[in-house]
Amino acid sequence: MFGFRLEGKVAIITGAASGIGEAAANVFVENGAFVVVADIQEELGLKVVASIAGPDHRAIYKNCDVTVEKQVEETVAFAIEKYGTLDIMYSNAVILGPMESILDMDMEEGFD
Image (cartoon, rainbow, N blue to C red; front, side, top):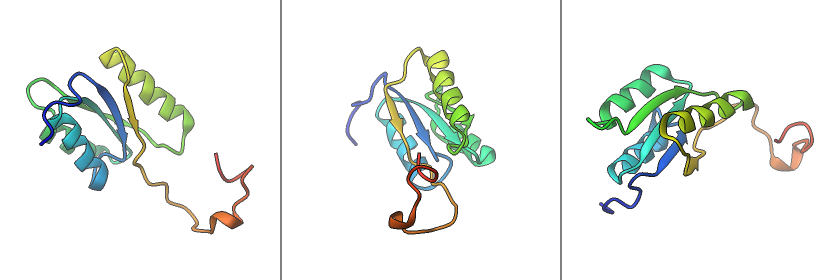
């Protein structure tokens, strides 16, 4: 579609086991990127990797719950250890919880 605009770039895509994240991971790989499929849905994440990685292993799965800061840090370290760099961080994961208006949120406690 766009050629190899991301050739050699390394990306972490959160929420990449399904939906928009999965589609993004596919497009990134098609455009030459190496992708860490980061998600809490391991079975789906591994299926995505199997379908897009190809013979040059352009995708790898890492279990990551983006609500846990330490897991995000570990995922970044994992990408750097595996590929030597990190060029793109695509924050796509959805965090489910009580739905309230942004106007009602306690910005010191409820938003980081």
